[in-house]
Image 1 (tube, rainbow, N blue to C red):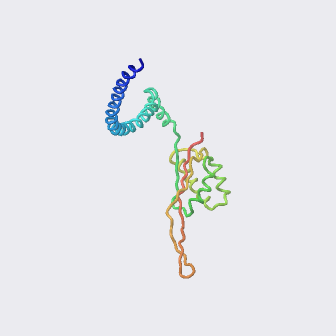
Image 2 (spheres, rainbow, N blue to C red; image 1 turned 120 degrees about the vertical axis):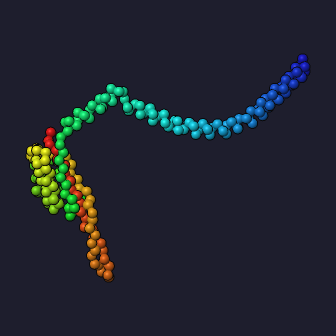
Image 3 (spheres, helix red, strand yellow; image 1 turned 45 degrees about the vertical axis):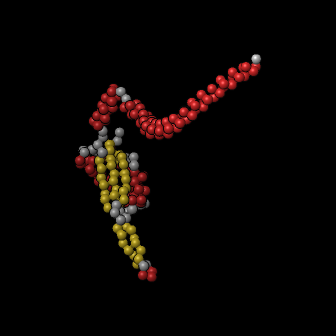
Length: 195
């Protein structure tokens, strides 16, 4: 019995092996062509879309509902009516370096006018006199142009920016010359009424 089964199984196995080999031979020939073209197109097509979708989602989240938009539009209008006036004074081309002037202006920010005058009066730095002139000019601008009380003001900002540098030369040994940089600065103070 075993012999007839072996003979009958052998042709079936051969037929199955031949069928599998044919399908494998046909499939690999088609698949590499499909794989070579499809992944490149998918990679090119999918990458920008994947990047754009999170950006769009974030934009829609930050915009909010129409009620939030209306509240945001109404809020700045209320602030503009309540804003305090800002008074500004500036001294340009002051013959000191901006670095030295910043050492003094850092002491002035946020102080009221009385404190700032005291700081400048007792400061050892020579640029303090220039800052005092700018402060008095800003107070005068507030009183004359905006009808504010000078004693009820505080310093909102104080800044020292670099101005143009004057270049001079000094003779040195063996016929050489060295450059001397005479630096200038622009001093700015803004005042606002106290709360």
